[in-house]
Image 1 (cartoon, rainbow, N blue to C red):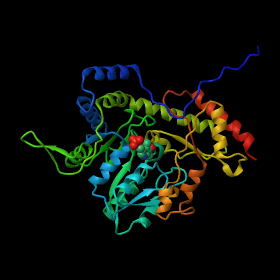
Image 2: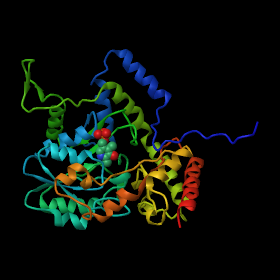
Image 3: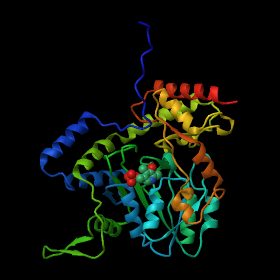
Image 4: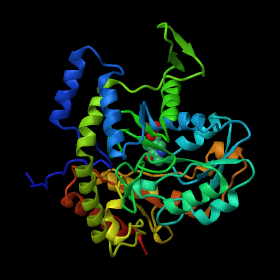
Length: 384
Ligand SMILES: *Cc1c(COP(=O)(O)O)cnc(C)c1O
């Protein structure tokens, strides 16, 4: 028999970290008989509020639901425009459209992948009601520019911070200040509840609105019966999920520190790579970035293979690769609104060239080296 090198385990591009304490806690909730929204949801919301400087927090079944509820709370509907990046996940735009409003796309910066604020001003019209930015991959958008423009033009802000829990802007956590902040607890995010999301709101009145909108619009009357003032949805988190969230939140700072170390290792291993690397926060502000994803741009113009072939070659080496994101304005939905190629060059270039390399807390620096060696090997053969 010929000796073979051991086949390394498959490395996915994202993976949740669930420990035995969490599993035991979930079993306890399952045995308790109270599995839908109950005491664990209240505890998780309190813990999230403490983490975000005491601001009111309400959980929901997803960030997408949270964006839908946030748009309602901000009073956005038919005839309104909402400024949002063309380079993001689809949730924000879908919810803007479903609210009856019009998304107005703006291009992003090539390296931070965050909203280009020079272009935000120009996109404002008398119908603009809000800005819905994304903190791309966990790197905060320029919060000074964002709130300066929103304040001066009287706009609401709904921050899509799905990837940015624990990220900071000038030392302050995303969600601990600002207007409305949305987090996601999907398994690929820095903190998971399986599915789940949260809203950080301005005040108790908005928190009350969120409670109604996430649960049938119900308000309880003094006589013990229920009333409905607004047509609410059904987006309440389960106690099982909230219990997972409590374990996750207790470890979040640790998870994020591990992500930052792995990202730093990617930067050092890829320093001579022909790939274009993502923006880093200021060296003295490394804590600002929670590094949900490490996305590089492939040197496609110099490559003899397509991105799809590159991804397949990585997969053949046991390495998972993601794509974040497609250009939203070039989806069928976007084109139907009149958008076309050439409108947002940075977004379109990122959409063509980006690949997401594996990054999750249980990875080792050796895993990062394995990924970078595979990238180098494939590109050595594919670049001219
Ligand atoms: C994951 C994600 C969402 C959607 O989160 P869900 O909880 O799955 O609804 C929205 N925006 C961004 C930027 C995301 O990465």
